[in-house]
Image (cartoon, rainbow, N blue to C red; front, side, top):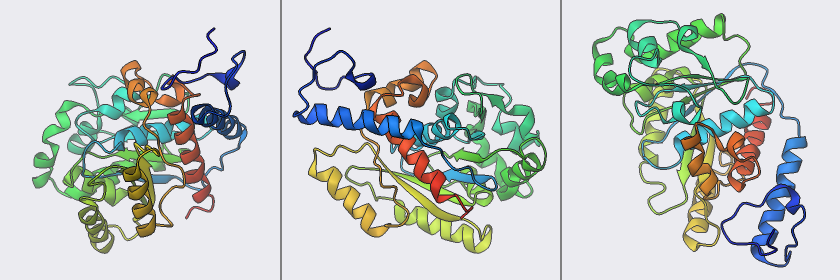
Length: 311
């Protein structure tokens, strides 16, 4: 094995058998990632006293919303929680990352919201983690925002289905994550009506806060008129590159506006995170040693600790 450590290559467990110049910035970063991974793997994540329903939303596309949904869910499941991901995005990217079939005609969240099908009937186990489950989304969901307009209790379709599920087959779930489409239509509104918390991923790039005001306004409207329990509990900074002034400036700005909500750990740009869905996996199972996997495991731990008392 070559003793040269090359940039952009994930190094495995504790650099076994490899001589590394520990004075180089890259080596220090890799060693710190490995130490963090071992610490997190040894840690116990507290389980919430009751099911936490968390909607993951940002109407701006490409901010790591689905990536954050599935990886936080997988990290919590890997640490012993029973977790359900509801894919509410017609693109079905969360379903892909979780290794779940979502071709047109597959029983999905569409049938739950439009046809009254029970959630337990469309929920499927994810192949790589025994305590992780998914309600898939198919392309049939693409017209749901329009179809829901004339449906009775259109804002409460998901709430009605999830309430029934939690009272029966889903009573032992610790977390339910709802991955929303990049819009503020009826699909996202349904997700906000049923949730106690909103997790907002924010990209560490220019225009990061663009649209955030509208999202917060929508959440406040839902809180006033439809769901008094909902609140922004978590903000996750994604695609962070600490080498650039821009990323650091964006992170500082977000933390200055949302000091309590913003998770301490940022998600770095990572090839492993990007490529994992092509294998039908999250980065948690695809490459647990990568910087992205370690970041999401740390984020999951912080989320778990924040919900220790059910707050």
